[in-house]
Image (cartoon, rainbow, N blue to C red; front, top):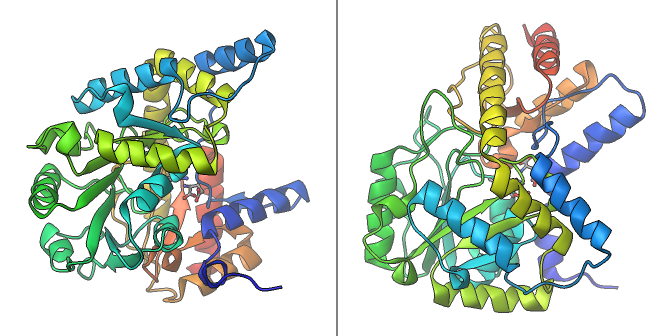
Amino acid sequence: MNLSRLAQSLGQSATLKLNELANNLKAEGKPVVHLGGGEPEERIPAGAAEESRRMIDSGFVRYTPTSGTAPLKKEIAAYTERYYGVKPGPRNIVVGSGAKQAIYNFLVAALDPGDQVIYPVPYWVSYPEMVKLAGGVPVPVKPAEGSLLVTVKELEARITSRTRAIMLNSPGNPSGQVYPEDFIRELVALCEERGIYLLMDDIYNRLVFDGLKAPSAFAYAKKPLNESPIVSINGVSKTFSMTGYRIGWSVASEALTQAMVKIQAQVSSCPSALSQAAAAGALRDGGGFVETLRSGLERKRDVMVEELSKLKKVKLAKPQGTFYSFPDFSAYEKDSKKLSALLLEKAMVVAVPGVEFGLDGHLRLSYCGAEKDIIEGVSRIRKILD
Ligand code: PMP
Ligand code: GLU
């Protein structure tokens, strides 16, 4: 039987594949150190557990409105107002099954076949494949040699009559870098002027270090939300350590949002009622939770930076947020897939090859796991390479 050309053209998710591999090796009792992970190790917030339990005990777990329950959308509106300074109405929000579905809803709502989507390198592994799934053409833009950040001019130079959207993830997976205020201001102005959607993937926006804040695109918007090209994506997966609940959302103009709701209704009806109750519980009582998670990650970032500094030829841009570092190993090995395979075989360390994020010669090393794993993992890498 045939598979569609689309199915055949799609790459696997390298991050999910390696995550599974690491967990399988651990389950077999292999002494693997997993530096390829993409989720915090913390337990979920108490409020999330209480609300899921309450719903199970009620005995009723039903379909919800497609765009999300009223209580969760109320929490999301308050959260958006607190952290972005803009208050969305219920018709500006769609809750999906993870930030991933929110991004996909957007792409399907915005793209005609052959429309182009621009995003900087290094990018999150799923961007190119999601754009292709929605019929679009991915346009990755490489930064200048030695930098992990592009300029607005470099993005602008790639705009054509087919460009429908620019996607930005800041702080970024895999680099951990935060795009500065001036960049965001110029980018918002560019997208408003040219009528190009600006998808801000803000999934790590509160996991930033050293007193930094990730600038919000809405802060520089001249247009009101219902006329705005800005689409903000967020969720509870990373900031509230709730990856398994699969809750993310978008905040955007009413017209775009309602198109996304129509799409989601035909694809998945609504996100899980149980997960939505839990997400509302997390947002209601999560202030302290996020700060504890954030400061713990900052400490682990310091450990990762310290350990990597012991490798003689590694170049590292210190991560300013997320729980990823993206060191340049090209002085040891330029082929990141080869290096990742070597480290798995000889040192039982899982690391994601940089080429999966569009930049060979790098590895993505996560610091969301235990401190002892960071120390052990990097020291095993050092023994092999130095
Ligand atoms: N965007 C980025 C940059 C991510 O790293 C992830 C991680 N999975 C997502 C979106 C999707 O998040 P979720 O688990 O909520 O679908
Ligand atoms: N976002 C995480 C990562 O990049 C989780 C896995 C995924 O969804 O790709 O590792």
